[in-house]
Length: 520
Image 1 (spheres, one colour):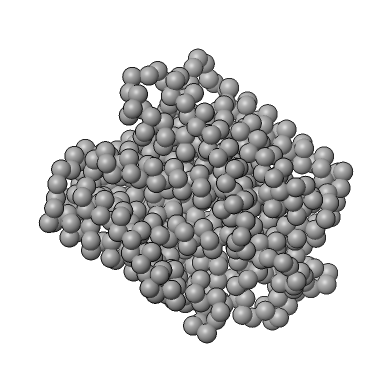
Image 2: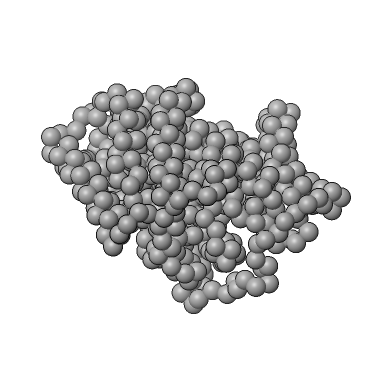
């Protein structure tokens, strides 16, 4: 499949427009050299709509669009639990976690760990997150993005990866988080419009041109197993999504870790004008998450009927783009690239924030603000170059990259969640207890992976969380050690939320109940 000249023109116009707007936003209202608050936290002035849009643009990338569509092709609607449970998780983060972070006025997640525990915990977790962002997240986004460009245009995947990295640098490196967050509004509009249009055309094609509703009915009738939200034990994909555990087990741990303690996600909320504004943005993002399966999972299911003989599930979404007419194909391709580059920009900005503020500034504490901003830009470039070099060797052999990412990060997320939750809500938690949870998470996960391989990884995450929690509590009580707690006492933190946030939460719960009741 190749793009028509009109499609290419539309795509080039999109690239030029986005870069121009990003540079205009970066320079608008700005005088003199940038400081770290301006570059890394958009001067703490983001409105709710920019926060919500940027949260989704940062989250929805190649690993979601390509990877989750591939999982939709392989196992069906059940993969949507990652999206729908995330909506509720976002609201919990907005109510219980975000007030603590904003009260402590932090730049990064490692900075909070230093305030609550000590420099050892901060440094270990900072190095861990840098490694994961570069060698898992950035590599996955670049690799899947390169494959998508190759499938849609025929351009070599390596050239596609280089283009994505260059595009990301062109619009985000100068302006930092402010440029990323405000241009994400354009990205999300394009992503949602293009995704919904592709889903409509996919369903219409399934019905033979008789409309999307008829197509959905046909799809449900022809592929009933692909519309089971709760998989039974005899389902061959049970190992990936183990039944009721997706509602009450380890998926909660993974979602809380991702949406609550993941720097490149939570950084948008940390840059809000106020707590109320951040909570509105999170509620907006939650409702966008409810919509995402229609955009990223449904096309993958439709591809089972339209392209039944794909070599790999991750080819489903790029193949579906061939359904688009000339002109709109370029628009949907632009939406796909928009999702990819927005995540790349967000990840590299967060890598530079953590490295600069948590590691480099500690080693060289008396440099100018301009020096730290320049360092952050160099780190962003270095992270992208590293990811370009290692992407194919690390991910080239996997058919479902989304599942690989979830399983790999599942080794560490239980310990991360334990470290933060006991640090926030249990005053006796110690640095030694936090370190034991971090080390125990990897050790327990690897041991269970080796000695109990048939245990679904979602269940393993839940079990390791309980083991790490017990270990951290035990070590904290027996070997308290030195803990320098400079964080805000939560008795001074208000967890009350406004009426609009509360109404949004109730509405989200009702929608989720209806969805799971329909496709139980």
